[in-house]
Length: 335
Image (cartoon, rainbow, N blue to C red; front, side, top):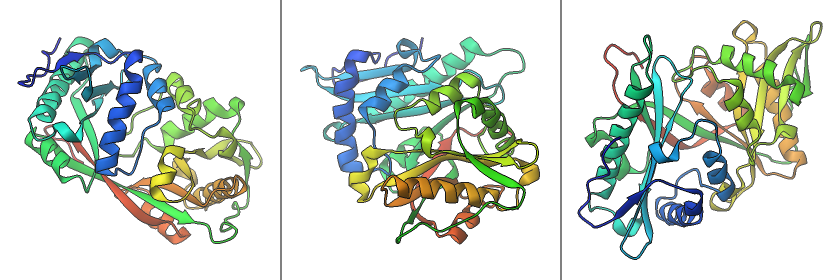
């Protein structure tokens, strides 16, 4: 096991438990109030993360409390057990605004990086690796970015949140000839997962999603399967594209409007360039508008190999917040 965070403030460190969710939510609320991040948390999502397959809180999470029992810091590593090359660990954490600039965040991050290395050593097999530790942060949070850079992490990718606000009815993007759109249904879950893995095989940081994790994502409280769409070849009913959508209601108050969010959008490589992605987004927009929402949103890798950023701009989406992904540099790796 990695040692507990070094700390000169007398904090008591323990793994996260279900009993900590209320206190953790209050800590996250205080952090979000000061930092104004593009994404907010919800209680439901916290519980859902606790219940995900392969989660080991005793191994991969930690909270620090002061002498009065108040939770003032947390760290949570999210290993991806099905990964082979590289093996990824996503790292999240934070310190209460009233306790910052005392070295707690640095000590916490050191523990998380050490914990990720221990996980990799304990679970790696021949042919596995190397380890890639990934942290995401809003570009505007200069202090957090400096902390990551001091720990040896480097900015490797930028992702833009994009929004299209409805002015009356949403724009119409009909499917191309030979393609029909159908609502996502449970019987299509597995076929859509396979198309997703194929569609994202050439994207940065993407590795195949297994059936368990796919089902967990579609079952989340924020997920809206009824707003999600699948593109089929007219003659064969073969799945060639999909859009899965969600409602992150915890973000609406701070951003000032309600929004349907496209979590995943993919088209099989051999079917790209026909307008299928546009049609899927158009159908998603209609679902959002029919639900009474103000806008459609999505996130995009600004260096996507499919030219997705330019596509979304051409449809009327406009960039808002930007998130930068930090990671350890793997020798010989290209971004």
